[in-house]
Image 1 (cartoon, rainbow, N blue to C red):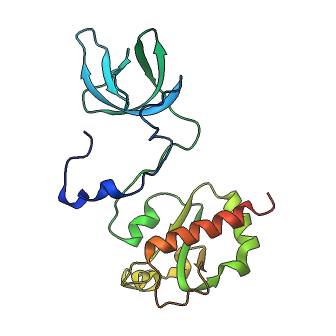
Image 2 (cartoon, helix red, strand yellow):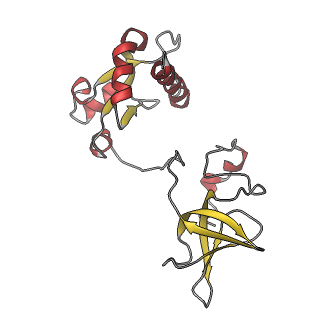
Image 3 (cartoon, rainbow, N blue to C red):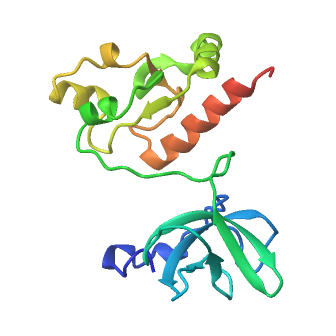
Length: 204
């Protein structure tokens, strides 16, 4: 309902589910749990009917919304009805996606506390783990940048008139013994996040 049928998404259904908190199993409803919903219609009495992934629509009272709106709600049962109210989870909920056209735009997207570039020509992550851990624990927002299959970050920065070592706090080789000419971006993401998580969690 939210995403139209597209040829580019033809095989999306064979991907493993993300299992993020905003994608709970439809058949399991826990009282007062958070769900992401889609406003389907507005009744004559002003009550919004929201699809929260259950067999019945949830009722949302006293809120100015319109059909097609995407909402985060807290869901609860009341008698034979399913009710919901607008709410904001205090824990991690899900990711969001933004599209930009250049490295410059990424750097300006927000005020990053810590900026990390990844490159096979970077410093060995193991040798910097103590200082890196200190900076990770202090940071409120972290940017981790990866190159493309055809251009590394050094090349991208040079093409955009940037000096990589001036615009990033760290340039790290997160796979120091990779043994291949290049590493796929999706593999580099997994390896880098795992390495950073281990460093951040060490001795906590």
